[in-house]
Amino acid sequence: MKTAFIFPGQASQYVGMGKDLYENYPEAKAVFNTANDILGFDLKSVCFEGPEEELKQTYITQPAIFVHSVAVYRLLEKKNILPAGVAGHSLGEYSALVAADALQFEDGLKLVQKRGKLMYQAGKEKPGTMAALIGLSPEKVYAICDQLKNEGVIQPANFNSPGQIAISGDVATIHTAIELAKKAGAKKAVELVVSGAFHSPLMEDAQSGLKEALDEIDIKDARVPLYSNVEAKPVQDANRIRDLLYRQLTHPVRWQEIIENMIGDGFSDFYEVGPGKVLRGLQKRINREIPCTEVGKVEQIEKLGEGA
Image 1 (cartoon, helix red, strand yellow):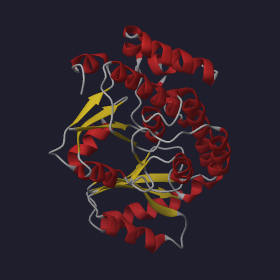
Image 2 (cartoon, helix red, strand yellow):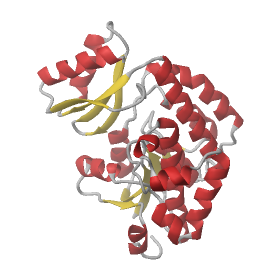
Image 3 (cartoon, helix red, strand yellow):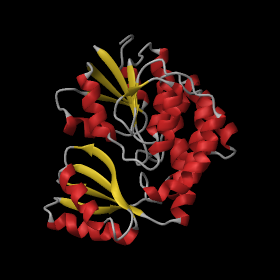
Image 4 (cartoon, helix red, strand yellow):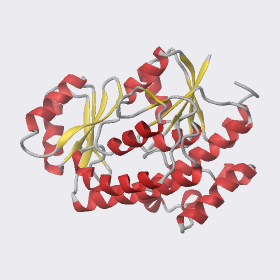
């Protein structure tokens, strides 16, 4: 049985996240305290007490989810539950790289903080939005994007699970796409509450700053395969990982393919490591036969036996 760790991205945060871990485990306490020192603001307070509006800001959300995920990973590591392969949804790719020993926690946190600020700034300078389309095939979604490509920036941003695809681009173009999606038979087509058009060309302004940050950070060859967002295939080479993190900002997250490829490669024991249960929900829609265990709270960690 091959074990996979999958790590959540933005939208998995909640007020109170990590507080029980901090109060019960010295390893988790150390992760959060180190994060506070590096970030230069009181992340613990925002995670544990809110307010929610502050926690939802991209430049805070990203470090918060990353820190929570790594804290949980450290506790699994202590129980000798280790992955044979990893993946992460967008931001979660950075947490996955810590678990794969390709990134040091401290370096990963600096990258994630920089990434969050750059994406937030790019969203301010080139306003955009995203929408979730439920019940359409990838072909229909691509057709809608192609139909509108001369009107503005638009492209698929997340292929999350069968019939669940997010699109990203200019505000007016996305609004038109929502109407077209409804006419094309979408069960649901709704705008998402986001601070920018993530995973689209409108994030290009963030890429140059991220490239500088990536070039300054030591990335090692991964100990276990990372199934990357951009290619949905396993990668371990440090230079390729660096390039894929750079490209990830403007390319779609191919989550459904990632899970299908991991299952095809023999992974049958999945853990969602970090806050929430978004990825577990997606997994049920991708393949009901292969379960995913959410691990983000004390009671969930205590349930896990020694070894994997």
